[in-house]
Length: 207
Image (cartoon, rainbow, N blue to C red):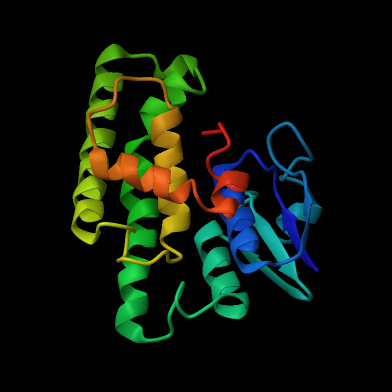
């Protein structure tokens, strides 16, 4: 059985949990990370030298980095419609997974730390306004993409890209500030909410 190390409230752990629910993968999860077992112990560092969650163990195979994990799970346990083997189709999905990690993920950092985590180091009004504007800019990119596809991030069918993007959209709506009107993003959020796996691990009120 798959072993998942990481607290369920982590957005990156929730990617893995959502993938397991989509692909009907049985797993056991252990609480590691903030508020639980420390990740800077020799035991954990032997699994991930970065001391970060999630980590999975699939038999004698250990893997860290959430997007690498969901790609592995989709390849081993998933279906070709979600993560196809054909190079161009897979690349179109991978670009949005990587965009979430490299661009969208960075854009929300200051706003999230300020408004959700209430970090004293992230309370500068000008920096917060700039952070909100930057996050909104990337969400407008997503809105245009979703308007073009009319359904999901990479096309008219649900794919692996919708897991990290869907969790990012959940974070967007759950962070308390006045959001610009993005009708395609809102429709996408409601569309994802019809999926049992997203309701279990995505739209659960935890940004």
